[in-house]
Length: 121
Length: 112
Image (cartoon, rainbow over all chains, first blue to last red):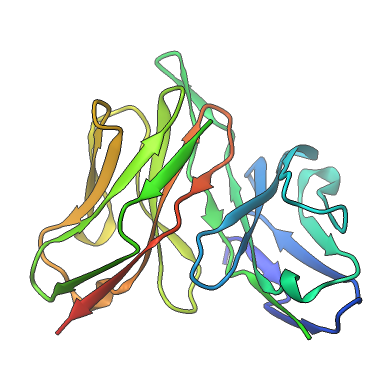
């Protein structure tokens, strides 16, 4: 399977504990995104990387969240001192770089993993 | 700044009748637009994308969408609904190098 893979698929943790999730993108993809989705809502942007550089981090993201993408391959998302409000599905996606068409930059579609469901008790 | 508005949070249609899921976007530049589908307990799957080529875009499973710049819309349609179409649908916008921004979703229910 050459799709985006996330590990673990499910995580239950006690409030106050730290958790780390891993995402392995499609191998030739330069961009990697992290989103968070709660029940009944659309995916909410957290952060994204282009190769190893973190290009943007959501202003909604507290300092307890950190993400890395060493060597521009896999990525990790760490949540420190988890809170019950962190319970959600964490989605990873990857894509190729935007390409130029007719003078405009055209973004490419992102391919999503199955997600990591976090439950904080 | 880019954004999308999905005008209906829930749509119900009878099997065999047409489907219309509405999406309006806001973008300062020529956007890329996508529709994704999410079946229960499944990952997000791309249905179709618009990237400044033909304004009528055909996707998988008989879905299509039309980009209308004058109306800033990108509505998703299907001529005949099937039970397997029941899912959550997300309209997504991206301009230039920007990240993907999702709408709040439309839940499609198919009545037998």
